Structure formats: structure tokens, C-alpha cells
Image 1 (cartoon, rainbow, N blue to C red):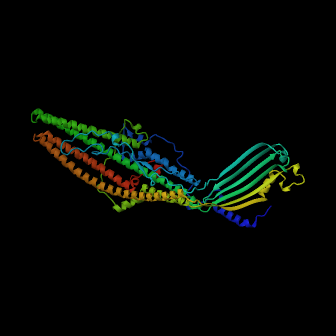
Image 2 (cartoon, rainbow, N blue to C red):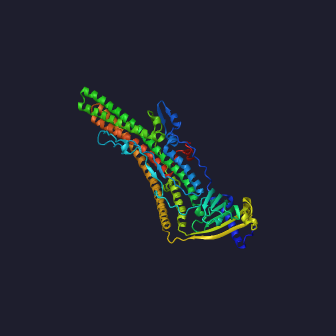
Image 3 (cartoon, helix red, strand yellow):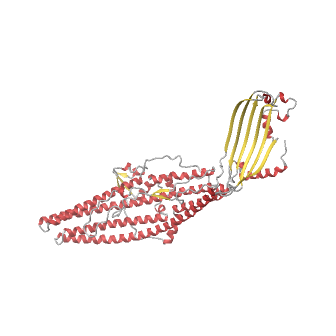
Length: 631
């Protein structure tokens, strides 16, 4: 066995140290603990797709009606809403991103579009569907436009991507960390017509060969690529002047390539793993944001439904007033104490209030089907023919306990999941810049090789008396030579590629840097929007409370005015025209009171959404919601 040349011993020591640092002995890269997220188990992949509603919805149906409170509505939305279910399946995508990156793959990216709940038809006096009653005369009727044409059935789409849909460049490729085994088996037979028979002792040279090669290769977080090869061959021919025939050869080889500039470093080559770790957090935050959007939408839709439900009662009572007025007017006309024209006015008022009641019931039905579509998985198909009866009423607390504006804005910036995931997107963009910067560097690679060779064959009559004893034998002899390192080969060198121009990488780096700056601006815009939403919700709460207080007083005085006018009418001191006018004013005051209460409830929900506290305010657990449970 030959001794290792003295000049190669330092190189072998250095190479061995490098291999230990690179983690070759462990069979897998060993990154720093703080950069190593736990291996994902890919939960949720076995979760089936189901379009059956939860059992809760059937438990709430009694005597052909769905008795629904706000908390029940929120629970049904968490269990059945398809927008929430869609994001529930998006959470495991973060785990797949991490598993792919830990194997050396690039990030495929996430979907940042979320769905809000439908707008709905709105509450009483909503300018979206029906104009308020005139304050200058009898309550006029209005036939609202079709809800589909008004766009109240569709779900608005929000895009939370900070990159505006433009992907960042991938930068310098990373090694594949998952080891792979390769192999080759090949048998060949070749016949060659020789023009010089004396060269091989035959005019028809027949050669047969068999190759059996195998190896394993793997990349490491330093950027190194290592491969171990085990090559074998067996060859025979009918040549008469071969000294050895057949002949067997084998070699054990190891090659490693370590980048020194482009592609060097753990931080660079583990950037996709760090990005994937952030993406796991982003998927959870996006689910939480979708949950907030859905919860807020359900609160808004339910509040409008309750308001419309109460408004129907107002319209029914107004119709009773009008019908009573018609009956009283008929009596007085028959007695001759009123002119017949008053009877005509009373009849017109009855039909006008009937039209208002028809419109109010129609709006309630439209809001009902929208609410059903949000709370079920099949657009409310399982609830057709079942009417919703709200069990909650619109209530305004005696006093608002509102914290200082600056505290609520600070809470919104710190707690809102849309801002949290936006900041993580910017962080990922900064991490991705490492690859773009590194791609602008030259390629300088350190290449080291080690190989042990073996060769043996059967001596022929042609080699009689001149045989080389180490070469005599079969495959076992050749393998023994290789294992004993009788004929080693070593090498080390540098491989350099210096691009004269590198405009692609330079342009990608410049583009990525611009996108990072744009993302930072978008995050600031979101923070400004959050502050604006908090202030707007506070203003809306103050306005709606003041409107409700004024509406309560207006309704009381309108009630007193109507009662006084009815008394005058009964003694013949007034006409149906004035009674009709006061009835219309009272109806409007009642609708305004209902609308003001619903506006306050929705403003309160908007404030909770703006500060990111709406889930806690309604005792909703994100962990339970991920599992499809309300609690």
C-alpha cells in the first residue's frame, strides 16, 4: 500500500475538518438551533372536504323556524362558512413550504386574497336600497332595486400581498439537502470489423462489457455539494494479443465542491427555510384575519337582519294605525261629520303603508337568504322554507367605556393580524435580498477529489513470462486494491467563472430592492389605515349614539303629537290629512330609532375589528376555530 504524499496530508486534514463542519457524518445538514423550525408533520392533509352543515344548525330549528342569537350565528359561521374553511386548508400550506425548503427547494408562495362577507341589503332607511321617508308629507313608498344589481350579494375580495403580485427573484440557487442515491447498470456487446487483423489477432473484434455504478450525493448549508461514487466494470474480448482477459476494475471516489463567493454561507443557503418559517406564521395570521372578516361580517349582517325584523314590526303597527284611521274616517263620513275626500285620503294611506310593509318584508327576506348563505356550506339549501327568528335585540349600553385614542391605535398596530403578516412579508423580502445580492458575485469554487482504484484480470498465453502479479485475479482482487488504497488519486483546485457583465443579476437585485421599499411603504399605509379605521369607528359610535338619543326623543314627541291629533280627529276638530301626516312622521321616527341602534352596534363591531380585539370580545378561540369548532 502506498503512503499518502506528504504534500497532500494538510489538504486531507483540512478537507476532513470541513466535512465534519458541513455535517457529512450526520447524513443531513445541521443548521443552528435558532434557525431550525421543527419538522412539519403536514397536518390537515387527511381532512376531508365536506359540504354538510354542522349539527348545531339543526339543534336551533324549532317548529319550522330557526331561532338564532348572535353567538349562535357566530358559531355557525365558524363551523360552516366556506371562506373560513378555505383558509383552514391554507394553514398546512405553510408546513409544506417548510418541508420543501428543508429539502433545498424554493418557496412556492402563498395566496394573500381573503373574502369578506357580503354587504347585505343594509338596515332600515339604508340609502343602498331604499330612500328615507319624506319628512314633508305622507310616507311615500319605494320599490328597491334588485339586490343582485346593487351588488349586495357578492363577497368583496381583499388582497394582503405586500409585493403587489410581483414575485421576488429567486437569487443564487441553494443546494439540495435531501441525499439522493444514483446507480447505473449497463451491459454491452460490440462487434467490429478490423481492417488490420494483426492488431488484435482477429478480423472480427468482439467486446463485451458490464458496468455497475452506484453513489450518493447531497448538498449542505455551507453551499457544498458532495458525492461518493462506487464504480465497477467487467470487460472481455476475443482479441488474441491481450495480456489480461477478462479484466475487472473498481474505484471508490469522493468529490466535494465548496463555493467561496457565489453560493457560500449558511445564512444565504438557509434563507428559504427562514422564509418558510415566517410563512407558517403568515398562514396562521391570514386565517385569523379571515376569521375576523367573517365574524365582523356576521355581526353586521345579523344586526341589519334584527333591525329589518324590528322595522317590519314598525311597518305592521303603522298599517294598523292606518287601518284604524280608515275605519274611524268611514264612520265619520257615514255620519256626515267629514267630507268624503277624507275617506279617499285614508284609503290611499292604507295602500301606501301596505306597500311599505311589502318592501320591508322583501328586504328582510333578502337579508335572510344572505345571512343563511354565510352561515351554511350550501347557500342555505338545507334551510329553505325555514324562517330565521332573531332572539337578540339591539341594545345600546348606558355609557361607553372608551379608552384614549392613542391607546387604541397602538393596540391596533400591535395586535391586528393583517399588520402582523404584512411585517413578516417585508422581513421575508429582506431575507430574499441576500440571494439577489449574492447572485451578483463571481463564481469561485474549491473542488477536492479523492479516489481509490483497483484493477485485476486473468493472464493469457500472450502475457506468459511477463505477468504483473498485482494485476492477476478477479473482481475480488480489484476491490481489495481499492479498499486498501493501493492506488489512490488526490486532487484539489479552484474553479473560477468571472462574468464580464452580469446584467440579469444586477437588474434582479435593483428590482428586489425597489420592491422591498414599496412593501415598507405599503405596511405604513396599512398602519395609517388602521389608525383611520379606529378614529372613524369612534366617530361613528358617537354619532350613532347621539342619533339614537335624538331619535328616541323624536319618537316620543311624535307619539304624543299623533295621540293629540287623533283625539282632535275623534271630536271632529281635525281631518284625516293631518292624522295621516303625524302617522307618517311617527313611522319615520320609529324606523330612524331602529336604524340608529343598528348603526351603533355596527360601529362598536367596527371598532373591535379596527383594534383587532373582535374575536376576544365575542369569546372566540382561534385554536378552536382552526379545528372547525366554535369553542
